[in-house]
Amino acid sequence: MSAWLPTAPCTPGACVKATGSAAAVPRAVLRLTAVLALLLAGVALSPLGRRVPADWIRRWCRAIVRAAGVRVRVTGPAAPTGGLLLVAHHVSWLDIPLLAAVRPARMLAKTEIRRWPVAGALVARGGALFIERDRLRALPDTVARIAAALRGGSAVAAFPEGSTWCGRARGRFHRAVFQAALDARVPVQPVRIRYLEAGGEASTAPAFVGDDTLLASVWRVLSARGLTAEVEIRPVVPPGAHPDRRTLARAAEPHDGAGACAGLGGAAGTPTAGEPGVMSDCPAPRTGPDEQSRFWTDERSRFRPRPGTRRGPSAPSQRGPAAPPPVPSPSPPPSSARAR
Image (cartoon, rainbow, N blue to C red; front, side, top):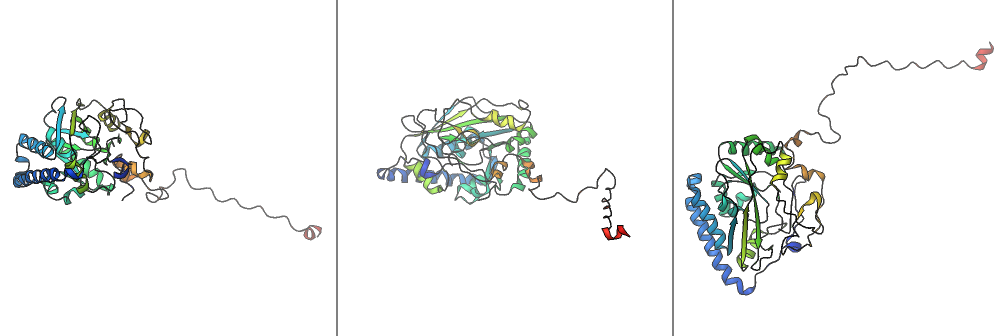
């Protein structure tokens, strides 16, 4: 893993609580069959690309989530039309169809998603903007491509944390992607996604974190009973409301007065233990090189010289020629010479 990549402290062993059982296997198999059938239907329509009506995409994505056994509850006003940056905290692979169920958009996705079976081809044909997360030098070009898509009237969906979290705590929004919204002068639509168990308590079963595999995460969701995905469409941030990407990123984050969460705080993450049913035994943040925070933070980092290096030959001094070295004074002659 590159030192530049943002990482979350969440791991499957420390954070994820599976709710399935052996009795849930037949139900999970039926759900998997339904999901695969819907995905194949999407593959059949994928050559049409963005010519597919937005309402069809919205209904299809919602049907996929529902076929996986997850109820969908959407609250808040409808997202505006036209160029729009859609941002949300990232917990699960389910976040992608859930955002599309709210507002079909071009997804900002890591290049690894191209290799996902079936879903990778669908995301690519849907106009996804892929980012090479381990190549810092590619970041300015990615920001420019996002801005161009926004200017063209497309909605772009992104997860500015740069990594998935388990849902017990949230990462901070890194700000580079918000530069694209500033450059294109388009609104930012914050969306909050929560996964709840049947009793209304927060669920970590859908989380896709750490060294978890996609297959294991999918199976946990298919085996779970009574999962609900709560999608809250928050007030839109209009263009020009914030002068720079730092304040725009902070404005797009949810501020819900969450309580303390053991092991997480400050720059490491935003605790959510104050919410109903969220456990407060989060793992401690991972430590690593300071460069990790720069990947999504400042695209101009590529122009910063590394410690101990020089940008090029030094410019000549403007203070005139250097003074000549001092001439040493002659040593006194020996005493025998003075006597003569």
